[in-house]
Image (tube, rainbow, N blue to C red):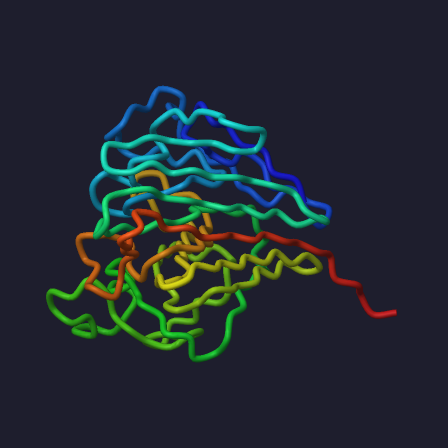
Length: 273
């Protein structure tokens, strides 16, 4: 695999090639080059680093809108008021290995997501073990029977692949819906867009790991909807840090550092002989 990043524009991944194809989708929204800290998110596609939150404040976190600096080949650093994030990206035997290290005061709580928007066909599917705990987020309420959504709750729990009866594993065709969900305690997922397979694996000792899913099949934004599918390895179990309970966010230990590794691989399946 090969990855390209733009440190000046928030450390954004602009290309992810492997298995004979480009995997990242590029979005329609202009203005990505002119953002500053605290700006509203610009859906330019690619893969954005979201930290310390995904939804909420600041919108999609505080690192995507800041310039990063290179300290060594493949290593980028971004300094924020409450933390410093270091990312080292390497290609090893055809696999992308990304090592992250966050330095902050002990007790600092955060969410992180590799907000990957993927260029997928209507036949693509997301594969992870059946029964994985899944949290639907509020935009799904409109797709459920009346009074299904519990009042005042930030999410509705269920089991993969059909939480509350919604089949989420199919990533198309476009049907005018947009649904967000978090797969809890889920370190590995596969995106299958036959004959191609993309695999994300996340490892972090002592912290909650999961996968965020943003399945926008032409249902958002309301004024000019388009298709975008996000498969987002993450630390935590919520999109908004403000909604995260004690077990739903990563926590900086007494050492003042949290380290984690994301591995990305792809291959092309062989057809029948």
